[in-house]
Length: 162
Image 1 (tube, rainbow, N blue to C red):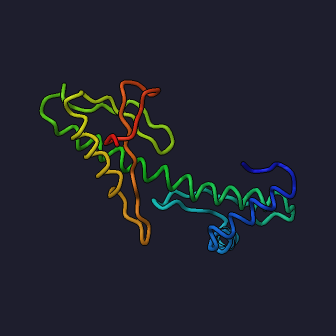
Image 2: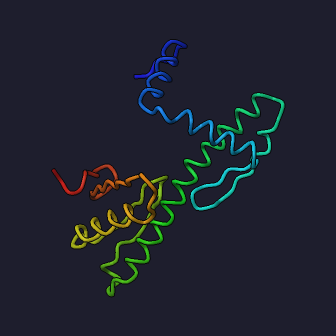
């Protein structure tokens, strides 16, 4: 539980800094790069211009810095899931019988939801996990995909069970 008062917020910030000691240097590097280029770029090269980084208004500068971090992190995550999504769809399109093909029905942030014939659950789970974990490789970052299955969203449980 995080407190909403100033003391609780300070405690939460202190905890984050202890758990992720390189976070502040990362934030500073992103801000410095943004001041130099006036844009931020995702891992796949999508750019977002943030010219207000050079404003004399501190609130606008802070907002641009937050937007840069958000774009870098969430935009890069979106890039990664799109690559994995395309790879999954391409892989499943090669299944000869259309009735056996898993069907991508939803992407929600970093989650992909497939409709899968019951007899193909094990093979699909293995394929999706493989694709998500190797679709894009990053230096010093291990990607781990968690698979869940169920008859509907409310009944999802970790796969494989146990």
